[in-house]
Length: 371
Image (cartoon, rainbow, N blue to C red; front, side, top):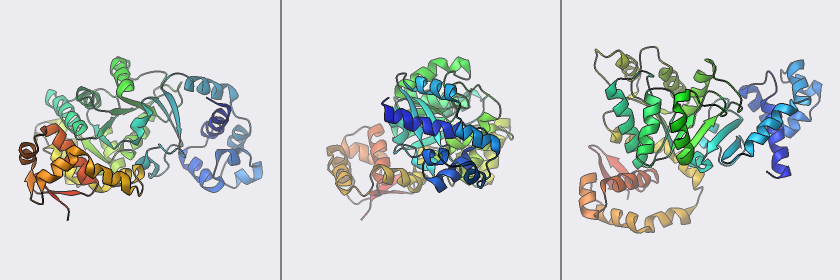
């Protein structure tokens, strides 16, 4: 890192690591002072007007240099990243939640932050069928162009990440501890795979140990950065329902797979459905609901960029697909037959075209061009 970057990170870390100042107060201070440097340079009396106590103010004026230097050394390692709230690639949807984390620590492919994320969560002790559902849905959604987001926990989380990786998709694991350790330890192998084809992400500094209170809080990031959340299996009292509730508060789409009335792991998903979550049987049930939320991310990636939008139309495969569709209502199978493209390719292209407003999904899994 150059000197300017190091100094900038030092300001951010001094703010984030000050005792007694959580995300809510950090956001309030940034809204008022605009930069961490301005906050750190404010006098005791000014800061006290914002509800900071003496201990917090002293930490701002006298940061823990040793701890900050250890984090800066961690950042010098390959594929280690610090994302600030003001960075262009800070996830746009996450930025819109109440009290977003002002810093994110990451290992892996940083460009994964700018993709369209979709969360899959569920029981830590799923049935064999639940594991397969998580893998299959993660794989199909990955092929459709979504980046699977989950929490690297045992059970459904693990199989969601695994399904995305098996489909050569991108996946993001949000941890409730620092990235100097993987929790649970048995997931070190899949964590390394995620680093190569996605991202490990957390709001906690590298040396932070797993603590029960961290995980519910971590769930707001999983839902906050995602366009929607799918709950595969969940008991009546489940951490997955915390993620789903965060999603509802954040205005995200919540989806749930129903199960047998005799399966205790279906009680949580059935409860969500009764509260208004969308009952899911196929991937199409999810994709047709995502366009409004996904458009926020796409607008961030391509702000008023008419040339880039037009170039999508002129890509040969997209032009071939649109020409095959004409202005008739078509099923995926019909489009596969007419275009000669594979079903996976067609499904992925249809999602992109729908999110860009060029086609519309119709009842029965069919599509038509917009006039």
